[in-house]
Length: 629
Image (cartoon, rainbow, N blue to C red; front, side, top):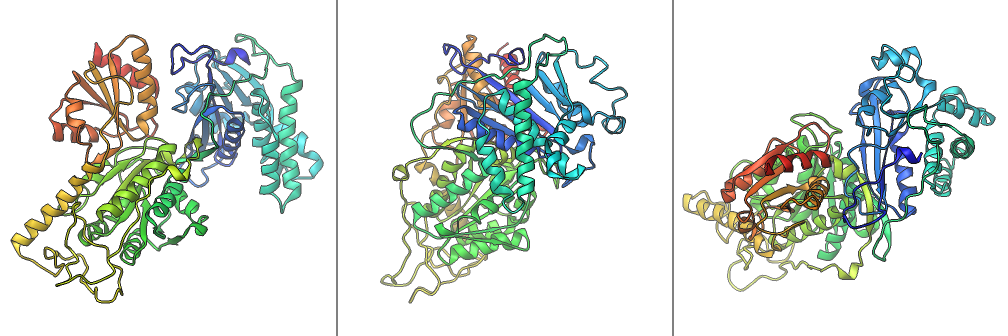
């Protein structure tokens, strides 16, 4: 096994002995690859390694078995150093059938280890994967180490005592595979055993069969002496990755959707408000509704509406009533919410809108990742309808971005859009649980008493924020709705001068949010470098690693990563103009690039990827070299 692993260039080029391994599990969507990867991730986190994951699954609920478009994969990069991406090239690929092999093997680094379930490589499955000959036998995999194991038969043998039918027995294959992977990397089985007992508490025979398969896979690794098919040799051995350095504290593994959900709850608590979440199921945003539905004890009310419009308007109604309104969707659903967003802007009510971006347009690529909703977030409403926009860069960062979105929403009485994407929503990483006492509170105050003189529900404070008045408060009856408001009074007012003034007030209020934002910092490097790589959202990991490697190679390069997309930080223009050249890697056709050119007249050049897959480190390194040549 040792020959199948590699020593990675560490984040700190002077750090000795740091290493990482990238493992990918791939099989049919019904083979439990996401579950297998999730449990391997849990065991890896408990071993003290830093990690990042990338679940990649088909859009079909259950694609035809054995087909290329039905392959589901789960990749994890773990190591004894800081891990910021799920890895460019797998060191180990575990392929459960020919289709999984065909769609994934070209990603494996040369010399990497391929473990294939040869029990699934019959003619029927080979035909479905469009193989004319068996790749396990024809020498086409010569650039990799190959281990052919009849995982299907070994699983059937392991669970035979439990009297399961063939179909049920083969569902335990993923646990046999997980057992082997746990042995390969010296992972503890006991957490998985306890998880299986809990998951199948009402089906003890199924639990016992899966545990038997898990143990059998582990035992196979302990007892088998299997060489690498003459491709570099080396027996299948276990390989221990040392724990990564970490600050003292309590850690847990968290996905982006879960982290964001916890951040929304924390933000509501810091504001002193109950939370109402109105949502409608859509991939990959649905997980936020699922997570929040389990947090009722923290003052969270969740509502699954009949459609996207009902979901956001219910959230607006909750904000009008004095709760924190939250809604969530992905690109197509965000489009449906557009008119209601304008209502929230016109009524000036706090609202957080989470957009978990996916490939588009239209239905597009429901399970693949993209960053193509930036224009939609900044500009995508009728009329002049400005809204603050924040973008999270990682699962951990989603927690803090959610708190920031709530802060801005309540302190400026405005809807705020929070951008994540499919990669962040589904990926997982270790998260140091913060000390809640260190989180700054921003308690909300409502208008409760009628001031002297006329009630002016659209009067302004220093932030141009109007007062928040709960309906039914004695003496504070006022108009609210989507028709243009009179300055200060809130009465219906169609006058041209009034509309000009109110449009400018709404614009200036959002631009004024920049006064409460920190200055834009440098994620790596220094101002005035020859080249700056500017990113946003989930491109952080590959950009940061690429810039780090380029700098270690002597190149004068810096990294700026923007969290506040609108309004932009006040010092950003001056910072960007200090660099000779700017490139902007984005998973779209150049949306942030266009905004930066528009706002600062800088010659930002695009580096675009719209394949549904995240950037690799190598792709960003190549862009850096090209733009420094």
